[in-house]
Length: 368
Image (cartoon, rainbow, N blue to C red; front, top):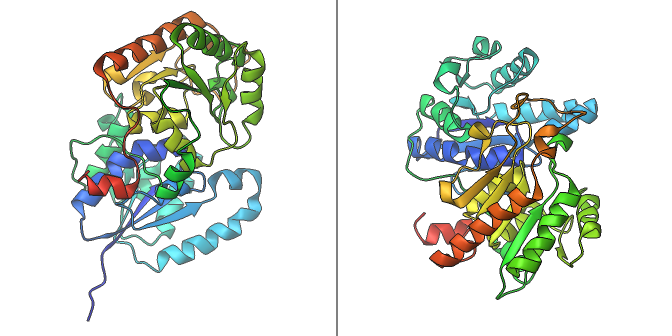
């Protein structure tokens, strides 16, 4: 007679970048419960990548963004909750901070409805009323988001290790990306998009940096962007004097991740590709507008990234919109160009290879 495995539900109803940042915390839970069946409830945006994490047994997509646009998805959520309850979870762990009382009520209700006997998360905005094990906000205050999520995982019985954040993609995506970028020449990716408009640097400034890198450093420029960001890529390309490989809107999430891993450097807004680059070891210049880069910076060794930001009194802030985004406008192309050139030349001196293994199968084979 087979013994049913203990089931644990990790809740991370957040974006793609948040999934990558959470990988260290998710891995800690796997370390603490090596025999458990670990389920992940995450956004439909992040689910395609989550399915390739080797320490997750099952991924449940949650339509968080879809719910904001159409409440008809609420029926699908009810069906999802009914299916989750069948697993009789021992523990549900919310790895992400809630930012309002309304958010705390929704998250708390979701964790209660999951049927988990033990519910772990940060005691903020009233979420503690729904939890059986509470993490004090003081334990994570001022810490990088990736480290904060590890702290929550430890409270749920996780065991930390010395590894960093990770991201994985399929061998099929690896094969499809094999010839998208030219071989034998340095390639710098430009990611001018991002979910929030007030985190996007001006396309003409990206274009200026791209032209200078082509002319002075002899690189190939690859323009990146997800579905719906084709227009931003076209605008950058239209402002350039030189040509570039325009992959904006042409790649799915796995392919985008694979391409980022193959770059010599990436210049990116504060967005998911920034965290993907950190996980794949790709050097990058990360442009920060309103967000606090001490909490959300690339989670990588200091020499692997450069931060471009403006020191003004109104940042950091959490606004979704701003009529006078000086925090981005004051970042100059000169600064971004010099930071990228410094990364390229440092990598050339050390002879580091472009990218690294990222499929789950490859990482398993080399014992990572």
